[in-house]
Image 1: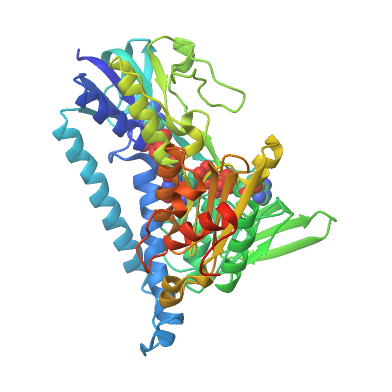
Image 2: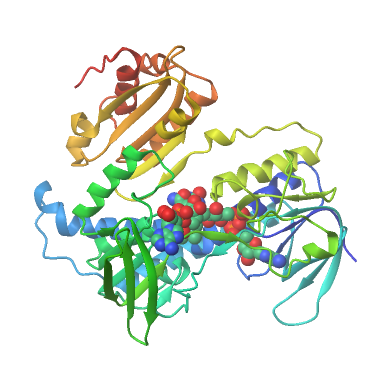
Amino acid sequence: MSRYDVTIIGSGPGGYVAAIRCAQLGMKTALIEKYSTLGGTCLNVGCIPSKALLDSSEHFYNAAHTFKEHGIDIPAPKVNFSQMIKRKQGVVDQTTAGIDYLMKKNKIDVHTGHGAFVDRNTISITPAKGKATTIETDKVIIATGSKPISLPFAQIDKKRIISSTEALSLESLPKSMTIIGGGVIGLELGSVYARLGVKVSVFEYMDRLIPTMDKTLSKELEKSLKKIGMEFYLNHSVKDVKGTATSTTLTAEDKAGKKVTVKADYCLVAVGRRPYTDQLGLDKVGVKMDDRGRVETDEHLQTNVPGVYAIGDVVKGAMLAHKAEEEGIFVAEQLAGQKPHINYLLIPGVVYTWPEVAAVGYTEEQLKEKGIAYKVGSFPFKASGRARASMDTDGLVKVLADKETDEILGVHMIGPRTADMIAEAVVAMEFRASAEDIARMSHAHPTYTESFKEAALAATENRALHI
Ligand code: FAD
Ligand code: NAD
């Protein structure tokens, strides 16, 4: 029987990154994954395929709607949907193959099969076909991720009532789609289909889209997405979804009890994800879970069972790939006797719509709730020469800084390439920069990043230059 220093169950961005870091630190490492490809939700049915389709659909949308203004006359473009899906799968395949390579390079033993605790130091691996085997291990990292949540009145049947997984691999382009949930998945995948000409109607029971982000971003995003034809039913609670072999019928009600019924080819359920610990044998070792089904951990990401750790979507906190990665590294370095640190406030959140939405730190709503006195500086992209050149003038950058000390407390952006721009705000906040620090740094001209500098100038002494 093989014996390892550490065994990681689940090969998503949490698990495979933890495995690499453990191996780099000299541990004999095993990685268990039940599927035949590595990379978990993110690489197979999450971050990577959704971004591939977002890029393809954005090209199509621009060819159809903005090329003319740029002085490029082409015949009306047509969607070759099967090619779009094929390209997306090619990107996924290349990316997951890259993880195979990384596992070999780092001499990590990959075991394919369902992993489950036999006891604290013994893990069984049951492959899809064939007999189960067991391995011995000193430490275990649970990185089993999450699965889409279904609703009792809108049960995902994977045919017409679908989750993001099916929405990333439809066989043909539908004419219409209803979406339950105006969060990240609903708006990213809704954008993909709306850009391709599908009638998309989003039902959200809160009073705004992306309700956990700063309110300014919700409002700006709603305006922009309406321009590509997306329809929003905010403050609506979905009561029922019926699916037939060819269509779906969704019924929802607003706060006043007024009913609306929308028929569509597909209904995408995007109301969040649940931690995944099915048949993991946690009961055999007595690992505690919280009331939301997440594996409970302490500040070291250790469970109540010594030597058993948990990271990523299966534990509390944002369900994000880069959060899972940081936690994987954190646990690996602790196992090697180091003293790593994660600042959860500075894990950025991004929505890859167009315009892109990106944020880090506190929202205005949170600062108000905490009673922290703050100042606001904002700068709209319509005042940016770079944004005018590329015709991406929707959106703004908002900097929130401490009223007394000028320390940056939050940065909220919606606009072109803000997914990349937010990194500067993370660096600034990690080093506890003031708004004036950013305002005094040279930003290349013309770039979108100048808008961050301008918003910082606005926050410093209301002295933005270009507005
Ligand atoms: P996962 O990636 O879920 O991996 C867990 C792995 O464990 C899976 O491969 C699973 O098969 C395996 N597993 C589970 N149980 C067992 C077992 N008992 N034995 C063996 N293997 C097991 N996040 C971002 O940061 N940016 C994005 O752009 C983004 N886009 C997304 C788009 C979509 C459509 C979705 C659904 C999610 C997206 N996310 C994004 C979220 C991101 O995918 C997750 O936060 C991330 O994958 C979590 O990583 P993880 O390692 O915790 O778990
Ligand atoms: P989410 O939590 O982002 O959004 C779910 C939305 O559904 C919320 O706005 C919520 O108010 C709404 N909702 C819940 N129940 C509802 C109901 N019955 N009727 C109407 N609305 C309802 O969840 P998601 O979009 O499913 O994404 C799941 C996870 O995946 C998120 O935690 C997210 O972080 C991650 N993800 C990240 C990215 C990214 O980083 N770009 C992309 C996709 C997914």
